[in-house]
Length: 115
Length: 114
Image 1 (tube, rainbow over the protein chains, first blue to last red):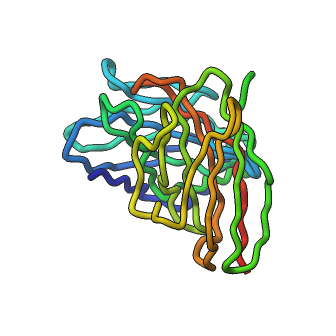
Image 2: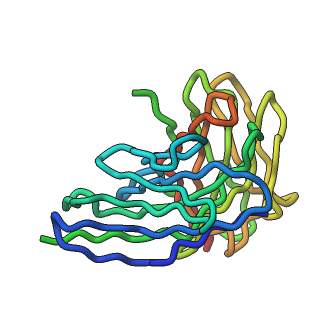
């Protein structure tokens, strides 16, 4: 079975400051890793995903994440946040090589950016 | 850009009533999913559907739940006899087919059971 732990439920930050949202996972099989974002009253939108290869993954809106297999982590970072980044962020995993497999989500981190 | 749509956006029902939540996946996608998020909790997988049959389901997806692709565009989730604990946001998702493809999510239906 897989599980995902997002270590911070809320992260308040000032505009233009850097931010890191932490995610750890547990799995007995190889997984793919994802970060999704949910803006108010909208569905989940993919920010980035790690499938294989380079452990540093770049996504939309200036976000990036680094896969660390030894620490089973996939932390999300942005060097300078904007007010518009205020949203709920979800880390997720899915089993590799299984086409219909589910996404297993963490509880989410609320990022609040203020001026 | 194509997107997953869901109707209604908010559904209020009485306990014991049947509800059907509707989704229109992206047109060339072949895998369909339902997830739910109880307020303050994780997004949880319910079921995946491919080639007109259930591909995978979670423990949550018991006999009270069913899914259907009634035509070439809609994908539905039926809850036969709703319980208070079914109150949640229900998300539909779809993807093309490969295990590396991205799942695209709809905006969700908020189900409130009174």
